[in-house]
Image (cartoon, rainbow, N blue to C red; front, side):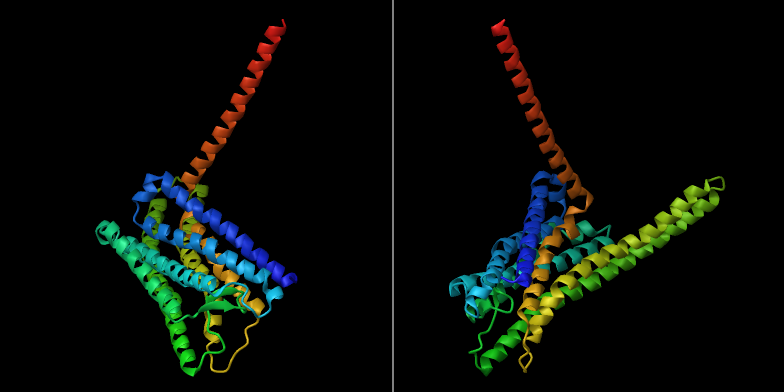
Length: 348
């Protein structure tokens, strides 16, 4: 392996470790907190975390092995055909389900922001389970279509088992593969991006409207309080500015991380379909795959772990473990001291 391949392989390992630890932490929060389980959006977060964990366990190691064995095997497939079919099926199913889960989360937040008083009636557990069922059915349809057409195989461009058409395919086969690829990315990446943009922009509009109302009330209050200290007024004005920026930053993180991680890989797959064969350098292909996998590592932080309920659970679990270790060490110290005292008494 040369230096670029070592760096790409190391990137996959780092992303896999972070993704596994962070997504398992989300599942731990669900098992430890009844409050988190009681919230309807938790169903979408749970579905997203399961998809990311399976993607981490199945696809990332396969891509790492593909990068490690690339130089030795050349253009040959280092894996068996059945293995590649299964890994490619998992990639299509899990990645599509993850994107649709993010779109479902954006819809949930739009309903919660625009219809706060009727949210409980508009977004119930039954509605959330129906949305998750659609995500799974939608993803399974494309994954089964891929397997039925035997389009899952090893691609040296991405050093992984993915949706792939061998060069032996005829004109009709290439046309069907192109239609399938365009539909797959249109109904996953493009559709989810559209839903997220529309939903979060509406959320941002409502948030700014509420911020303006709060700002007006704050300014009126400051004008009435003549004897208030200037530092307090300055602090209130700073909080106003931070309040206005907070919603914008969150929306930028939600949409920006989606575009940044998924668009390079999606656009590269679409460029491959051009009539005149475009050569995609393998390092670029593997790099886009690494960035694609990075979304699985960032999702827990974007959607859950940095929020207060999840952070409180993680902090509580960590403190409990530390107290248990401290108690164990203290107990062992007392036991040792007691043993020493007993020995001294016997010797006396």
